[in-house]
Length: 328
Image 1 (cartoon, rainbow, N blue to C red):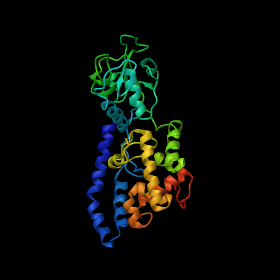
Image 2: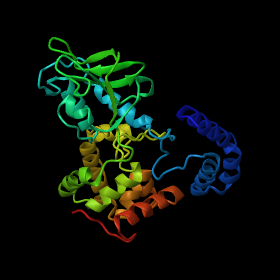
Image 3: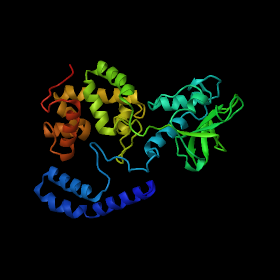
Image 4: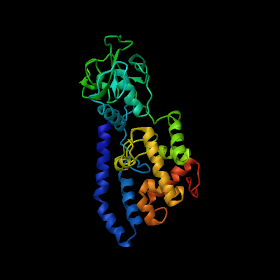
């Protein structure tokens, strides 16, 4: 099944489940127990959707084998689009100026993917793509350029679909959208899975040192929320490695798609709720269901999804459900 077909099938299942939701809610509502009503809704959605619902929020629909997840590709393109208009600078690798490979390295670096510095080196990373017809947004497209060859390309751009790329072309120009033309090589860089522990470990350690939230907890939250993917986007709108909602990320002053910022923001949020509620399970419940729900319940709210989420994070962190506060 193609990615589009999978999404259509999933949406049809959701629609079928939602159409019968009012009747089920009406039957559950007389009890006045919100948890019962919520369980009725979740049971219907669980039964009606072929795509599993991960803890926290529903995840993206599956994609064909070998293709990057649409959310990851969209995040790469979005990062590149933010830099449109930045002037070309030979040797440049920052928003003050880019050359072609500096632009590529910077964009992927913002998403936690480390790439070599030159186009020749970047052409050896990832997996080859046979033709532009098979290219996906986020793939790198290479050209011989004035100072390269087909085997050692001198120019690189980020494919954005529809036979277009974003690149930093030459002195006097700016980062812009150009036709993809006829590349001499195409490479798929997006990881098939989440970021490696080697990449994430120092980010978790830094956030833990500044907030007091254990590294094991931050690691477990990232694993449960996004499977360690820095570009994950749920159908509920939660974004990035730590699955922060856009309004939450804005309040924290972080970009949810930049791993270091996402981890720092999530750690600060968890630390605040640890201080407020006095226990790690309650703080995790607030992360999943909102601090208001925890305050109203006087502890873990009676939501099946939240209960399962808290236990899953604690299990992955190797901690007990009775773990007390962890920050001063």
